[in-house]
Amino acid sequence: MVGSGLVIVDKPAGLTSHQVVSRVRRLAGTRKVGHAGTLDPMATGVLVVGVNRATRLLGHLMLTEKRYDATVRLGVATSTDDAEGEVTAVAATDEVTEAAVRAALAAQVGEIDQVPSTVSAIKVDGQRAYARVRAGEQVELASRRVTVHDLQVGAIRRSRVAAGALVEPGASVETHLDVDISVRCSSGTYIRAIARDVGAALGVGGHLTALRRTAVGPYDLTTAHTLDELGEEFVLLPIADAARAAFPSLDLDEAQAADVRVGRRLPISLDELTAVFAPDGEFLALYRPGPAPVRPEAVFTS
Image (tube, rainbow, N blue to C red; front, top):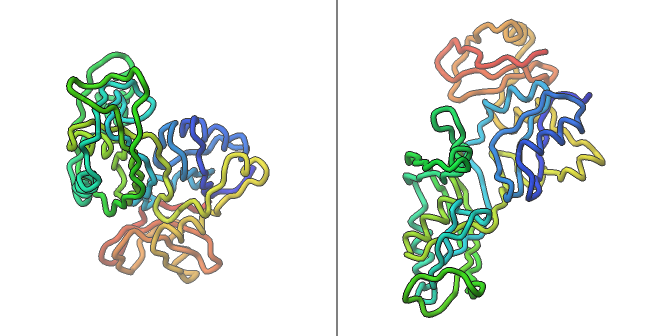
């Protein structure tokens, strides 16, 4: 069995996050595996997986910022706001200018009130929203405050809609626009909702055709491995390295480390949730911010 740490997986399309966890369990030889931040089956990219003691770290990780590359299709709306749903409407986009597209996307930057997709994993009365939708229920989710720190527009491509698609009355040209975007946003932001809302603002509908998460907190694709690569060589980021990457760190002396091992307060003040380490580099605990003395948030000694 491997030690405790994080596995940064480059998730393939077609697998759920739970299926990735199942694969990692087999590769690691332990049941103690979990993930931070779900990716939809159609999405690819960074999925942070915790192994053994590091599963307790997942809930504390400062994974508030995420990065994505995505493609938005304007002119086609779907039931799920992505390519896996049924087409609900198609509208011609020949009158939609590149300037209008850029302006609509720019309006998504900053603190915004966003209504999550109805097929999200948000719980409604104890049940996932997507489960209620698949059971035929009408689900209405409340908006939530999220932050889009940056949204860069890449290529904009105009294409014809496939023959036979539903076109709104009066539409003369059956076209859609594909727009590549890169987004840096807070946790809880739905890129599918950005596609939906931009399409609505332009009056033509929109959905997501591709989504790749390029970073979660300090972990990005440069440190990620595919499941096939992990099958050949299981790469585990040790829990101490994972904690140093994600949190401010503090190295203690032997007396302080002994206090931490039994959960005592430390006679120091901290500005942020901080990872503390023994003189030999062992990751001991996370300590809460505040004036002296500070309390432990979670102790990770074995």
